[in-house]
Length: 409
Image (cartoon, rainbow, N blue to C red; front, side):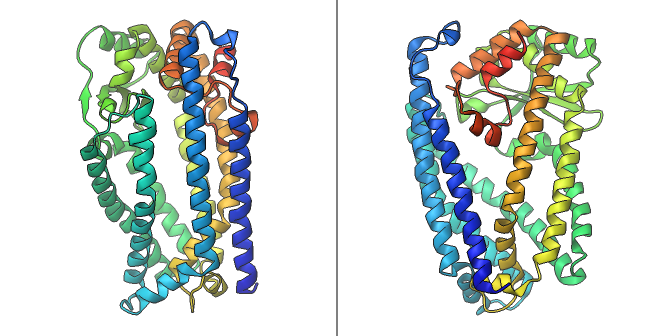
């Protein structure tokens, strides 16, 4: 296929993806019920509901602006061959293929972050501040940036280096070796995320002895859940929004509760949330998700091996010769329709798993406090109670609140 044809294919993919996302966002934007629904009057007051509508509209409008900016920028960079131009500029000073690729991706990362930072600042310090969610200080924001850059250099640089070394040394069969490395990395990340990565950004403290800890331990013992630690994370340093998550593979299991969750919920509600997370473990959702991720990575790497040595791709993006790092950019775009399909399938499975975890919590503990907790979370986070079904189908990993409550009725 000629470089010009490949460029048009790449541009078409970007355009179609953008139009689809905008259509879904528009449908979701218009699906909001402005009249106060009677079915939510039991846990939403009128003022809070109107505030949630305003929040969703502001977030949607902001998303339209940021998406349009990203789209115009992407189309411009592709059409005018800027990705290839950047390669030629760096290649004048750097001849080593690996060093060239690392500097290339480093430059793209920095430029991308510089362009996105104003939007992040507006989102955090204007929108989230306006609706009472933001607790992030400028100092925390800057330190998060520095830590993010450091991790990107260390982890991202290491993975890209290994990938390119395998590509250069082994050729098309590189994908099998890197697949094994990716599996090991995923396993390591899942096992040590709360021990090594999370503490860089948040403070984790063991849950203090008391009624809540005893209730959690009693429930875990009743359902034979091998819980080793319950941690509290200082989520309130950045936002008033609440969450909880499960971490760990093998015999050591950890539950992490946001301090905002603990402050706003009763002991029964917190145990119900825990029971939901335990449900994911008992129903093998954690292992299932890990296996699916492994399969998706393997397929992605195999497809990558088929096209990464295609010189025409490099030329399509403005390079003068075969450039593996430029081809990686082209690959991410060409593979995006497949990623979209996997994303939709993954969301379907995830929503099913959420229903199953809710049912497990209702069976082994009680549905009443879980319903209460979900209602409080929805109100506190100003969640969208009436998302458009098409938007849910493509984008929601969790079922909408009212669907979850109906399933537990």
